[in-house]
Length: 562
Image (cartoon, rainbow, N blue to C red; front, side, top):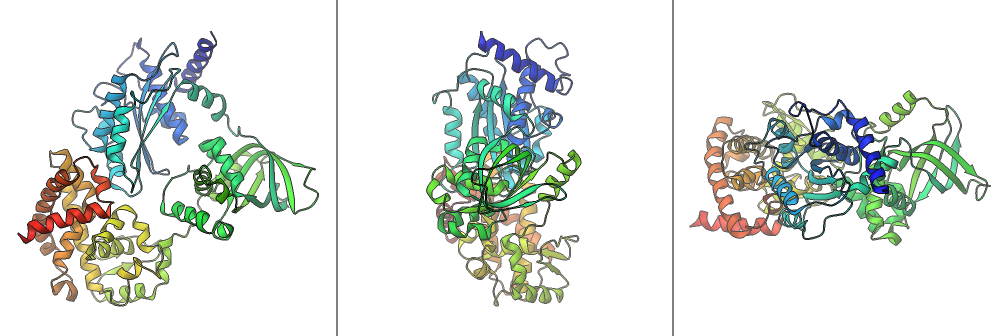
């Protein structure tokens, strides 16, 4: 009885949220719960990406020839492509069936392979987003099965998606994720997660705290990182309801924070910018608040508007390393919104997230070798853009630092550098005083070599993109997408031996004439040999794995020398 009442509550709320917003043109007289199913798929995106109802609604792909996928959404902030299947159980009973999970897993696999042949127009409209998620650095495919049943699927039911994750992911990188949301998850989110500013946190201890009264009340101080970890454990992404972005996961910056927390937690405060909370109201308790050494506060209606990456990183480590995390402290600012209008609140959120951020690669601008290369390239009639904010406006006469560091990595004799360029490009310029940066950018770096490497890279990318559009074999298509740095490594290793590579700017038509046949041969060889050497491995992971790339390089070298 209780389950039926709760099910009716969820159905009513879903209908209120999505009525008139879900495209039902193909089912004008819907009698089979297609509306609820589609609304549920959109709702999964609200739960995971914080989308507005209108935004989530237009991501629905459900219909004939939908590949078993009911919604697709590219979240550029989180660097995730969400792939959703939904099932509406009118009675609120049951779980995922074997057939449902099998069909969904097949659809996810087709997304991973960019095999959209025969898919409906809504799926095809997502092809560019899918391509971005598969080709751009740091993106993950987050598969979600949401249903209104009262049971989670057992391990046997989940085997298709578990096996697909096993083939797709490896020890180097996690590309494919999976989550199941059942009725309880949906009900809980509707009851709590959708309430604006609905998180209350009692007994928050600030150390060395201070107060600002004008133009509105705010407090600042330090807080234990373990406390922040507890918040993330308890509230997850709901903490970021008003934030422009959620926690992005294993980015270069976040990995750097983890490293500090694990190795130098006592210095975390000095390296980190801290977090900022907006609160519907703040009450300072008398207990433990008689001096500014410590203050005890009760926070109502909490939302974190700056520091999502700090919070998520601390939270992810806190689960398994609470003692280590507790050694760190974090700067915190909490703002009382009780007397603040909505417009000001929005402005605080927006400006807190749009201040300039310094990335590791920005420090390369301090390296005098960069200015030397820029000066030398002006004599070749090229502009070398190496400072933060510089943008290419003329491909014919400009190259960038981002291009140069990748091209030089692929030129290096050691294929491991090409692997870094593919799997963790930020590591190439993480520290301008050490390898790998110093191995690529130093006083012996030749400006013509740098320029020609970039020109070859551009042509290889163009050629692979063109080839990808015309190949029929899915495995070959994935090689065109994921083996780009590996293939460039082979081409540059060969062409870089020529004297003219170091002495002058190579004619672009000459580059094109040599690249096209080389790419054709290498794509064929790479496809053949990865099937022989790593038949169960997903190509994206092969080319982020130094050991596998070295094996593959040896295999191709054997053929070349024979």
